[in-house]
Amino acid sequence: MCGIVGYVGSQVSSRAQDVVMEGLARLEYRGYDSAGIALVADGAIESRKRSGKLANLISDIGQHPLAASSTAIGHTRWATHGGPTDANAHPHLGGPDGKLALIHNGIIENFHALRTELLEAGVEFASETDTEVVAHLLARAYDGDLTTAMRAVVARLEGAFTLLAVHVDQPGVVVGARRNSPLVVGLGEGENFLGSDVAAFIGYTREAMELEQDQIVTITPDRVEVIGFDGESAKGKTFHVDWDAAAAEKGGHEWFMEKEIHEQPQAVADTLLGRTDETGALVLDELRISEEQLRNVDRITFVACGTAAYAGMVAKYAIERWTRIPVEVALAHEFRYCDPIADERTLVVSISQSGETMDTLMAVKHAHDLGALTVSICNTHGATIPRESDAVLYTHAGPEIAVASTKGFLAQITACYLLGLYLAQLRGESYADDARVVLTELHETPDRIAEVLDRLDRVREIAHFMADTRSVLFLGRHVGYPIALEGALKLKELAYIHAEGFAAGELKHGPIALIEPGQPVFIVVPGPDTPHGLHGKVVSNIQEIRARGARTIVIAQDGDTAVEPFADEVIRVPRTSPMLQPLLTAVPLQVFAMELANAKGLDVDQPRNLAKSVTVE
Ligand code: F6R
Image (tube, rainbow, N blue to C red; front, side, top):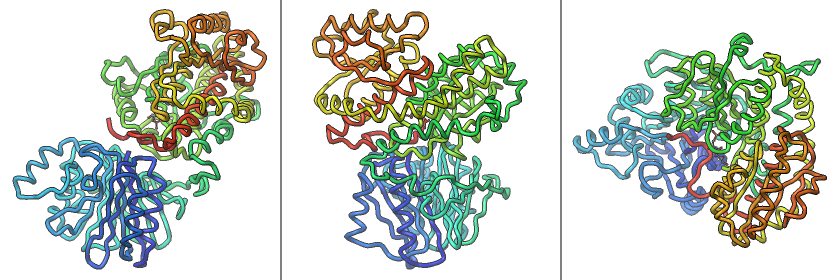
């Protein structure tokens, strides 16, 4: 939530503005309520900010160009305190003479008290934001050194924040601070960068530096200095970004989401890459928790939100079967409040594409405090959640820019399966053979996903016919149940259509009353060889709703003819073993939601009210 960019170079030119505006374009997925930029130019702060999407700011700058500069900061906002207006847009200026500019991602929880104190001291505010409070505090604390002022101010702040500031009296310096919100440094030659994530500066450098919690960073054109909030000097951990600017472009697709859907075979293949030895056994080197500790695990809890939580729900079915360890899935924002049971034999696995979701981060910290072992499944190198965890299993889906998660989801399921199969291998449980077959089949899955992607013309047509639909239901059972929930979530968030996902067996306990003639219902059908006769039960469920007039759109495996008499539409996916079906059946539902949003003329990549990275609780 909120994207942040900072830049210092040695030349006074248009580069500072170009770098920051390009960074904002790449970070816009983090929030698009407003955008703004501030430059230190000719002994003053030149600031421009506009509500609405970045395009509004670009058009404003086109009409009234900004001055040349060597030092700039920029912000793209997801509104928290104060509506999405020009006045509430960042940057905010501090001090009566506006000599300081500040941008912020996060929430200052004690801002009321601080604002009252400043009002009593005669400070006038131009916005309703918590950020402006910090700008004024910083201006008042400034006594010739911005880093020192930042140290004094962060000591007074409660909550989560990344802050970037510039001051007129120190051109060529940007100072950043972070607590529970993301900030990375981009290392250039004769120039340096700051960003909420590496996408901010990927067009300029692939060398980056992680910052720890509670650190302040000062960048100049040729220096990066890190200190803790306590003033102790610190050393950031450098890393090389293994993707380039092209990976953060649309690559000829209309939407990032479309591109990311098409990248799913690669995302799954890359997540599997290098995780088996020559005998085919799993070797999860990066897991950093001893085999003995893992053998002793007697409970697994997934903590995650939204789509990532559905990945956990899919994994529950698989991991319980393969390991016989009880698995529960907790929505991260509820976890802390249900007095969770966890100790040193509990493995708490967080799933987060961004690695920055505040609810998930807080759940991980709570689990850690309870003494649990914490593993992060994450797609973003150097993000906060993996750093706060005992171990990390990275998904290798590449940058996910569209707000709605797609390739991140499939990569999450894949990584969860790797973890489950690894535990099964360590423990030698009764279903080890089953697990071995799945591991072999997992490696064939990218080709099967590619096959699904080749067959989606009918899904696109159905989406276009349904552009005026007001409600869609989704049914599934077993691992198909979370996929039904995911199909409904995708449709809600992208097409703003009322959608509900149900376990198909639950229908007769109430929701079947919703079925009336013409009601569209998607049904994710388990393969005919799914244990416990589930296939037959779902076919009966389809019959039941069809008899009441539902329009049934069935997702079924190749060769499953039993569904045909009761289906208005059949969308085929290749045959695969039951646990791997979610990696195929999720794809038509993603495409359906995307196409329907497209047919309604909506912004597929940036749905209303949302942001990619949810860094507030
Ligand atoms: C839905 C979606 C969200 C995220 C959720 C968690 O398409 O993208 O529901 O899955 O906000 O985000 P991460 O995985 O970054 O923690």
